[in-house]
Image 1 (cartoon, rainbow, N blue to C red):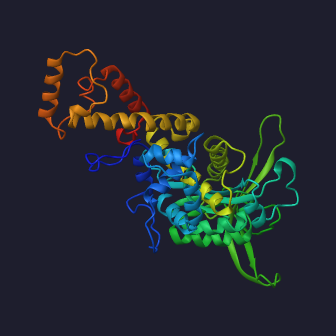
Image 2 (image 1 turned 90 degrees about the vertical axis):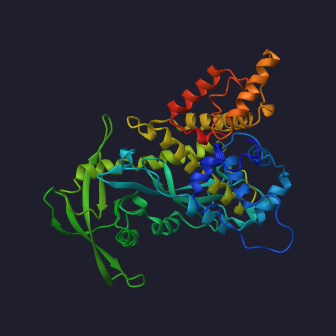
Image 3 (image 1 turned 30 degrees about the horizontal axis):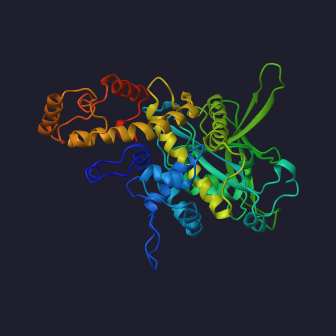
Length: 457
């Protein structure tokens, strides 16, 4: 992953940097306010992708991964100092720009239900390493003893279920609960979507907030109701489901009802052979039983489990460590943000690799991660070397070992006559000294996976 030369600057980035540019979008990374003194040696446009690339690696330091991407050295101590001085608003704004819906109704049918985009809201906790900076600023629960004796940082993610693509994320740097973080994410709910939520969100306060957020963007919600809430039955619908009323009470006067919320209640008995069945109670804003059959909604809610699988991919396959590696609360939040951004990059590649007959979630996340890491590290530099050798044969990194001098001169004259604008580097692989069979197999591999050539690197 060498730094682009002057001849490469007119082309779009390849490899991880090309995938990063696609995820971040045309607005690019946010900028910080100018400060007095010397400019940083490594700008944010290189620091943020390097941090995300580092989150995708099994081994190595930030300094090593920055050098892999940009061929620029930066000491690990300088990295630590730079991260400590970065304001959190940079990462929050970057996630707002980069995390957005990516599923297409034509290509990714499993990500939609009757034209509605299926999204889910859930939270998880990350363990922080026990350093003096963290233990002095974070209060651990009384139960945190032994192997569980780590402070926790809560994170809530709004997820596009069909792609495991994060749409928004909120990180509790100040000890916020999952409930508080989830309410923030309602403001980023996409249009024409169905929001899924587990029993934590099946209470009247969240139903009221979700109803307001859904009305604003033309979406709906489907939540599992809490056992403690007793609604008032208004009427029974034609399919056996019920229209119920939820009483919104004054915060300091429980006996006073401020308003009534009308939702449709669906009761479904679920179970499996050899186990006792239990009843699910679902609340939804989809009132019409013809447009939204109860059995279909129950199956849609079952897809909420994909959110748990997304967290497993994030914490077991992408990170692969029991605790975060950052030594402060702020850098720990940055590490979580980098993991979420890395999952967005991989979701984009996963969607590209899927074909019309194979849904994206049938593609193994672990195998995809191993493949794209290798291709971004090896095939991207190979492609750049081919372009450079086509423009200037003297820069070809692999000269023909046994070709006569006359053949080499003829090849150089042929490449110079064709010019860089019309020369296909893959077609010129033999003249550059590379076996055509090797290049052909790499090309077939990328075509079979559906990964674009411009995302090598």
